[in-house]
Image (cartoon, rainbow, N blue to C red; front, side, top):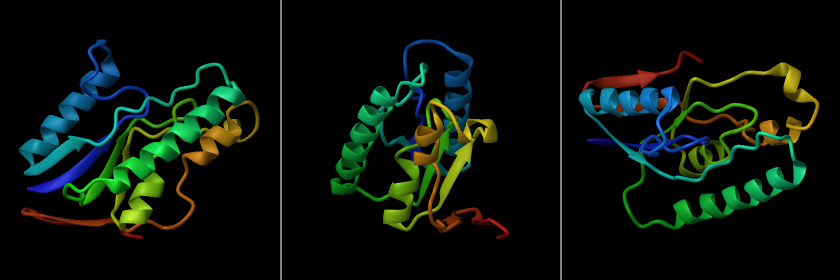
Length: 151
């Protein structure tokens, strides 16, 4: 089975607090499994800053960098794809872009938020930190065929 690293910046899909987002994430994992993939939660790091606090954001970015290094040091199987669920300006994906780039694997986001109005203000640097800064490979093979982007 093709291993997929799964990450949700707000809360991991298996978090015990019920919410619609968690339910969609769990159903997505089940759909990936049914399609022949092996999705695995790669990190449970929560990076949400609801207040726009630069100090909190700086601390979360340091924690995210440590988490990136921890994941890169793992000896287990490398994923074929990084899959992020629900990234937005208050909880950007600080792990996926650097890890996908370093591992040379495709990066996919389900339910991303694009908020140009947040290019300025208390979340601007935080949101920008979660954006890929370089092209990331966009092709994955599965037992059912290739999945590629058109660009």
